[in-house]
Length: 153
Image (cartoon, rainbow, N blue to C red; front, side, top):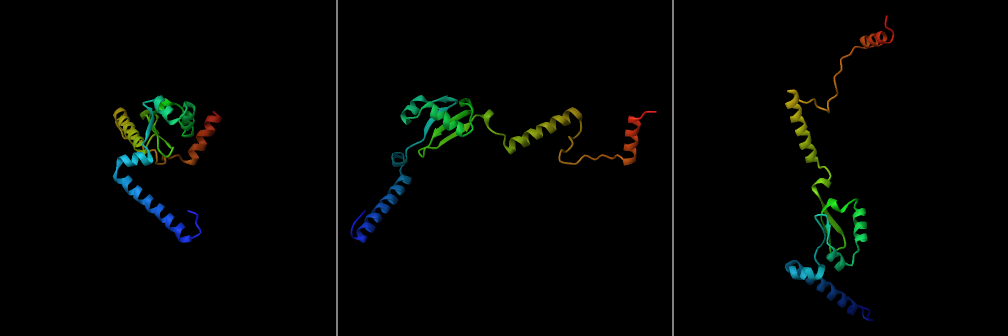
């Protein structure tokens, strides 16, 4: 790349860029070439079990794997359904059903089930929790009740 002539350096750079573009276009068309250039995903945890053979191939220790998990706020391997190490070095994972956070849809389904159960038990519609409760107490009556309860005759 270093040359006394600027045009030679420019030509070498252009050849490198064109080669890179050709490799990328071939990589998109061929799965084999994609595996050779970028590699493929490695499964390191499946159904809560560590794939020791894959860790050895990747030159990873279980302590390093646990470190990756702690960085992603995962306390136990039992919480993981599937964990993969991407070719970029990033650890991706899928949590088990019981370890997944509650989604908005889950919350709405639970609320609907509670409303249905309330209606079955009480025979009436459950009060809306977003509405302010209507309390009709007159000031004078409230003060009289408090006085009577504090100072009985």
